[in-house]
Image (cartoon, rainbow, N blue to C red; front, side, top):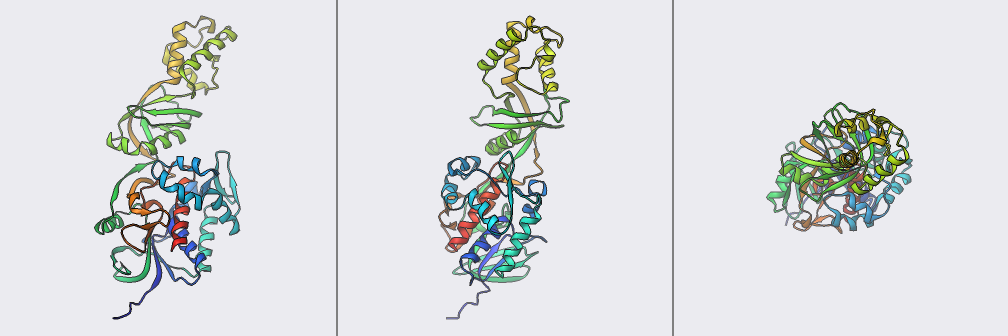
Length: 404
């Protein structure tokens, strides 16, 4: 029987965050492995370069695995075992060991102290050079033969390897190849997007922000909390992005036309009404425009008064029971119609990918095809904004690389 000539021990398809991390981890664990990364673009680590406004939000300072998985609309159960092997603390330690200083910002996001993604890219390229990992760019994969070994076809060439790791993110071509070999693909839909809204309560208030609101998608059980920003086209900010991620499939089914209920002060209706009553007694000599017990932006408070039909020069002492009820209702249960979605420029995330039931998360190996591994967004895993998508990329890459 003729011996197969292997070009590599491991071929990694996809030169992004997960692919690089898996390749480097495999090399660290076994320096004798011959590893080749193939990338269809002109450059590697494209998302790393542009993420976080070019600063690269590498992870989040969430060090409790059970809390960490809550930031993943899809993949929570599967990622738990992965994060026990490689979590946010391990990520910070890994970069520190490579000489990269990181800083944690007030919202928990972790960035390189240099404030540039070039630091992270240079770190990865140094590791690639150190471990003599070969990179082939502009290599568009057209076919993969899944036999006892793997034959990867690209640019009229064929590479043969004993093991194959696919980390191509949302690649329809690769998904179709995997489907042909029996893998199930959960159809991709956008995640992490902002809302187009034309509501009177936010008209002309572009730039007004809120530190903590609660947003609920009507006719569903999905809600989120966090900061919110009024934009020229509607609403954005962490609370909206999180809601869009957790409701990605529902919103797609509704053709991105739905309604949301916003609690602008993240306080219950009853408690809000009681605060208004108490403040009315203590600030009875004030006029309405100066009466805002919830530290709301003044432009928004004036709009709330207009919205509820209360004159700005009305004495607080003259607020009727109905006035207080209307204020409480508007502040805690504003209903806004969502007309469509907008792309969030800092994130390019989709929900969808390889069905998680077909992957062994102890190793990241396919349950259907031996020696085939997956990492990153090719899987039906996605997260909210804040460094969590990269954390999943590093962690799945680490587990795959260690297993390989």
